[in-house]
Amino acid sequence: MALEVELAEVRDFLAQHEPFAGLPAPVLEDLPARMSMRYVRRGAPVIARGEDNHHLVLLRSGAADVHDAQGTLVDRGEAGTSFGSITLTQGNPSTFAVTAIEDCLLLLLPAEDFHALCRAHPDFAAFFDAQRRHRMQGAVAALQLSASGTAILKTTVRELVAREPVSVPSATSIREAARVMAEQRVSSVLVMERGRVAGILTDRDLRTRVVAGGVDASAPVAQVMTADPVTTSVESLAFEALLTMTSRHIHHLPLVDAEGRAAGVVTTTDLLRLEEANPVYLAGDIVKQPDVEGVARSASRLPRVVQGLVEQDASADDIGRVATAVGDAVERRVIALAEAELGPPPVPYCWVALGSRARLEQALASDQDTALLVDDALDEDGQAWFEALAERVTEGLVRCGYPRCRGEVMATNPRWRKPVAAWEREFSSWLSAPTPEAVLHSSIFFDMRAVHGQEELLVRLRRHVLRATPGAQTFLAHLARHAGAHEPPLGFFRGFVLEKAGEHRDTLDIKRGGILPVVELARVHALAVGSAAVNTRARLAAAAEGGALSAELAEDLRDAFEFIGYVRLRHQSEQVRAGQVSDNFVAPDSLSSFEKRHLREAFAIVRFAQQALGRRYLTQFVS
Image (cartoon, rainbow, N blue to C red; front, side):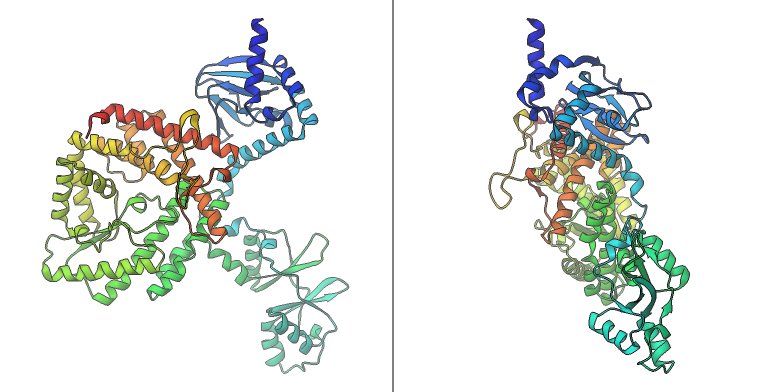
């Protein structure tokens, strides 16, 4: 009787989790008897890398991590997650390591039963095909991404071909070939003989060989074409094509398919256009612009750069740093142009970024958060110069796609444009009298980074603040309470809590409920140990090193921050592709079951860390 009850419980458990939930009732009824159980302690292997596995492993309870051969975390599973399908379908030994991160109870389905289910139920097999693709993609993502983030290393020339090849027979006259080129608006034409590429005629050939050479335009095109041109496979990578063209000093490269038939022509312009999606190229282009209009044109390419990086599986951390670097380049160039108009500054100053850009974590849909630190020698005449600078730069940034801060946290606000001594008094007042307004402002201004000017001014201010903050326990308690105010959108039974009204109804505010809580948690813990770090990941590491956070929780928060940030960036990338304005509101229906599961896990980690912070600072008694 007890055995029957246990089997019924296993059946009910299977019925709640994909892909078992989709199996017919008789199959589901029979399945538990074919399974065995195993208990694994936290830290022990579920499936060891390099060893054979002969079961599909299903987590009945607990949680486990999957790491690839390089030790990279590629998946994290909770109750209902399956492991081992890769070895069952692609052979042993296992190339992945599955390790229990909690005590786990496992259900083991023998390989022969797994294969029988796959043969009989296509949807069951398709589920594991998708799971394997995901884990394999995660395992090779780091190897696929180039150090510069450029698309040219991953794009095939086939992707650059926008039209069928334009060609003429070899007996065609030069005049007719030129007419075809003009009519089709192309800079070259392929010359064909018996279905094969016999030559190519370019606009340069027409200038140098026909016009300058005095050749009669009625002569056959074969007389002036480049015969037997260098060709490349349409499946070649773009960078290989570029190397071929530069080494041979050619500007047009005919493409052929596997049968040797003409498939198109790629030009150096086509290839160099790819480089415009390279953030290094973009930042360099911004620096060269002679006016704000030019900077704005260059900066308008940033959304496409971010989209390209998302498609290349770059991490959220890498993409945030790229977006920040481009934002820095824009701001520095706009400041330089403003200085050129206003003349040299009357005293040294430091223009600082605040918020996400200070932390090197900028995404799309970011507004301006700036401030000015000025040398204490500033007088009334000098104030007018800095006011003019702030207005010019702020307006220039608006034209470059960075809207004004709705809270007026910008250098145009006199409160955030003042001498360093005044800044020191401001921070001291926040620390000694943590009013709600003081806590709100400090949560922004503790994230400062020099963008332009005398960085020593910021170093001086930071030194003053960091000396005082660890001892300001009342202030830290208020800051901790503020860090718990942005609750993750996770309700009872780990369901998502969605926006209830307005234009973003039925979506997740992934910034407010996911990104900001981790940022705020990291800030409190880092300040408590006197760390000068500004970047969230660096703050988590400093907090762990200083004993404010356990190493395990710091790592969990870092992983949660990365996953939530990646979901946001991919959402914004899809908006860019659709021609929409980027935002932070993600519709759950747009997420896969894998993403939903991991997003819930990430939110749960954040909530646990908030609760732990609240207990540490007794925030329930802070008012």
